[in-house]
Image (tube, rainbow over all chains, first blue to last red; front, side):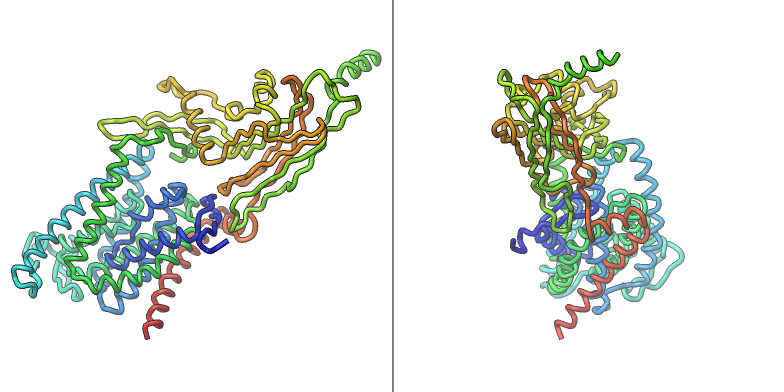
Length: 312
Length: 251
């Protein structure tokens, strides 16, 4: 038996899966995590479904793996001084409040039934909007920089309503002097969505930081990772304590691939231009969105599905 | 009174004339970290005090059932252009694993009445009491459950897979898949003649996680908070370790 077809039995998921496949999945998502500052939950959770991991275990365990790849990515960003801890802290305060709120919303929806469908629709709508906006914006930015001869980076520090709010704080790393209200609100919104959709929320956080708060792209990724570690860590412990669905063996395999991948991702990320980075992320987000939308629209090959009773 | 008892015994003896003596290649399956399925050889002999009856064929049926648990079967329907789960039927008890092996086609080896009495075939092994009012075709849900689990190798019907030699020695092999639920696996061996059951032998095969698998599983159930914090610590340590390792490599 070679390393490529070694099967590992997962104690909590109660299935046995090819170990190399899980390492590869983790590695791939780790690269993305380091490049874009997204936790990769929106990718790894659906991928684990396909591999045959029970959904509840997949959601909880990917939160655990996100912590690892985010820590790995964050360390690299801290060394480059690309993390705005003050902004991250403000976002985190909102994020934890939002995730507590989101868990409440999630449980309410669970009682109403149809939570799976709602989560899927959430994915399609948010991934669609975010991906499309980023694609359009970064294409425009590239066009602009071409017309200016490719040298100057366009200034996006316009004065909007965001700058008219009270309680202003200086965010030195981001080069911003704005009110804490918008970051807290962004944190709450992302925390809520993250809890409902079972992800770290980076793919919403990153564009929100760029377009709503006007933070520079380089700082955004490190700061987003910093914030995600806490939200995903909180989610992991919560899932383990209440549902007992975190599979450490599965997480370990994913994160072994993930932490290595994240290091490579960070290096690739620093070599690319901000606009190119955003176009790639937009394409990826739109791709996942399209896949999920097709699943909802196309006739499935098996109309029936099995679930554990009571565990809706 | 004694005369009646004796008469009963005499009448009953032909029915019990053939008995199963069983052997298993293993009565315990240990799920380790590298568990990728397991084969169990079920073999035995038929002990009899009278000569072999010549008028009817002797057949052997082996039924191996994993622990039963309730299952919800959902069906998707198109709602406003989107495929969504609409109807659901709760199956009260369905075995997590079920294999039926027989020495002849099942409908020859087993009469419908005996199947009803002993719940031997797969549809009989699944217990579904009632479907909600709005679901008219609840059998379709049970059929779907069987279909999905058959595809996953969890339900197996293996006709003609029991070797029966000289009407005395028999053996059959069950392949357990890798994604096994732990618990006692009820094993039943039926001897039939002309579709009616002559003797039943029942035993259990224990399927259990061992070693690290067992320890992790127990910890996650008994100390969930500690388990969660451990998972978190592993994640942070791995992330930090990889980052530091890479930096050292670059120097």
